[in-house]
Length: 116
Image (cartoon, rainbow, N blue to C red; front, top):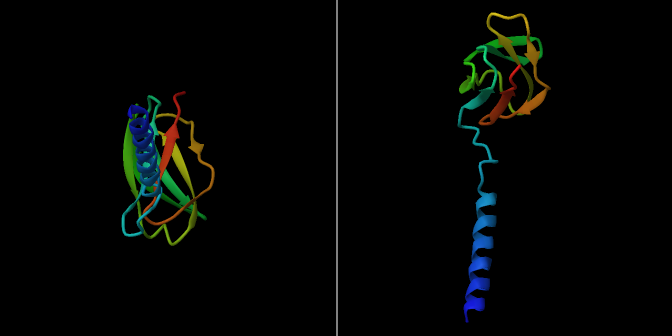
């Protein structure tokens, strides 16, 4: 009797887990703001820019050793938009640029800046 209960409980748990993945945070809502979450693991504060084609827009400052959420202006994201991000350290000459990624309205893009 207890082995049947264990199998039934395991099957119920598996179905519940699969159902959670279908409704996970992977889906985007185009009515939500498009955001960039910067995980700055370095010591220096960073000026963060979004680059689309030849247009470079400052999004804000990501503080050192912390996470910062920055809003990407809706004027930059029209449908699926190829975009790059620049993190320019304040008080230093080192600059970095991300790979080109495709951003859709309502996405949350995560940019991790490793420590130097």
